[in-house]
Length: 493
Image (cartoon, rainbow, N blue to C red; front, side, top):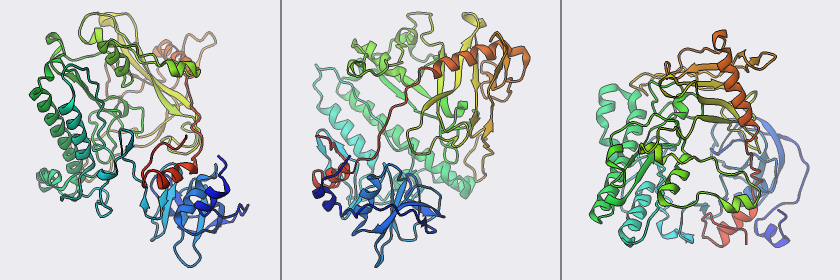
């Protein structure tokens, strides 16, 4: 987007230059973390008046990975296109897509209804360092306490004769690994018994316990308002726990990987609307997080089709209604396979898919039932390419020891001339080996299964959708500063 002269003046943008000097040591930005180190190529360096202008200059460049504003008499803004790790040593830094620091503080992401939730923004002194408890006092309200308060407000004020759909996505069981002091100290027996290495486990379990209590309070409110009897409650994780703070035992791997520890997660249904026969049962069919959309739509009697997306030429949703199978109205499995997604950089550069840019979506794994219906069905899994976090943790983890989680190469299956058989990739019989200990990828006895799964994987790859996410628009910073009191919000008129 091209800025007007007035907008460039507003952001104190310097003139364009083609200077390609080296970025000095400790000035490279680590994406999404705002920390600097090492040497890297600079795509621009020059004087600006403040860090807001430095941020805007970065946002104005497609090649910018991050920026650092050096606070001294030179006021130099370094715009870099490489990354490394380290500390800022007092310098202000930020990254494309995550940081736009204005003169009077960082931009807040807190919105309510049609306006920024300025009154709910915590004071600047309400901060907690990574892995340390959040300060509890009258002015520092914990973020998930804000969310819970809003959920309670909606339920308390909702008319009993109107339907209600409420989506609650807590942040607590996620980075930056902070929880209120009282919630942390309530589990102090963990560190007392297991030593300092258990602090991360105490932190993680404290966050899970906190949100569990919050959900309990919501259920109590639903019952008090006589809403629970006609309410369907669904709970689901989005991915496996991150190794280092969470534990996916006995599954292999964790978040950022397509091992079972990264993709097989907990979920449940509850509430008075759930048929009595379905309560207390275990659902053993394949189901994905995106299947909730079609499933809840079916329960509510609404069409899940995204007609606006279809009109724009976007592919249809791949959510599958699982309701009839969940409540045993049918014996037919709604879903027979799950494609496991990755990114185009994973095979040779970035197994964790953390690099910036418009990476293509790819499928590098498939989980599918192969065989006849009924007891003879076997659940198989095929992975190809590089897969990170290929290890297991023990029952009591984190415990002060480092998990052995290397990145391994599964390779790519080589099929026979007729495509009916092949070997290669990492193949697991999940029915017999749910924790992925026995790789059968080079066992010729399973050549037909490998060929079947690899063909399914290739077909899934032919229909992936890779949206063009564009580049950072500096007008977003202007809108946050001038229209929304340092709060992110809509900026396209």
